[in-house]
Length: 66
Image (cartoon, rainbow, N blue to C red):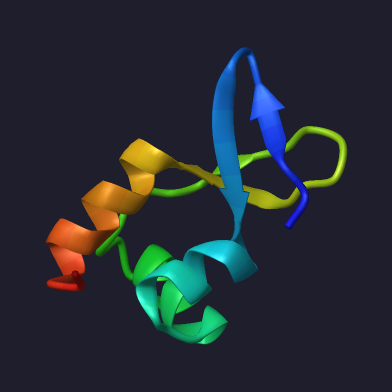
């Protein structure tokens, strides 16, 4: 896993978040599209979706994942 740090804050890519939560990428994309979870931060250069640890905790609570 490549460590992504922006302004001292650690971010995770979609594949890492899905591995942490035990879900598929499409599930994460669908939740975001339907407004069930907050939209991810988008890296201005790569346009990758990036999630902070705080974002992952919010998704856990909203989705009921542990």
